Image (cartoon, rainbow, N blue to C red; front, side, top):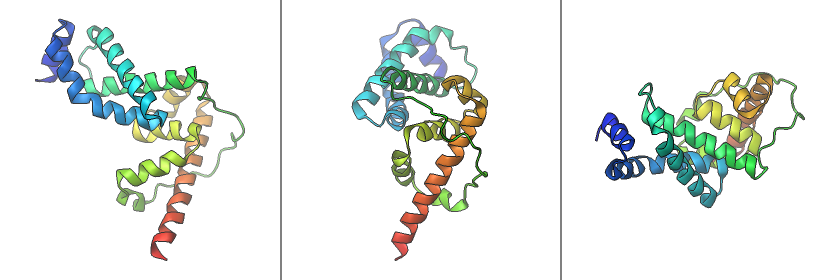
Length: 179
């Protein structure tokens, strides 16, 4: 099925199109939700909520951009909503001093997805969320500040600190592997 056939089928209420959409994108959406929520059960619930939102609002999808990209944004919003609801989404002002920009060394390009996910899992939640939104999802700091209701500079600071923490984790793990 093409993207257009899926969209048109869902708009018409075609169960086959709904099923195709779920089968084609559930794993991708689950990966996003796990990255934000860390809890498999809550991630499954957010994927379910994502599909509910997709089916309810598919008629508003105008074909600009990709359907998976649109669905990923809905998934991120569902995860952030869940974190807010459970009061696990908080951004304190304790570290608003802007640190020196951290470069993303080429050596990180050699890491596999499991290594990166393991390092991300060790980050404090507020760093991990901003890292996910900016580095993985591609949101700008302006967009992040609007989504999370924080200042742009706060988003930049948290990202810088997240990169530093990942860099330190990498160096610690790298040193272990060569000893």
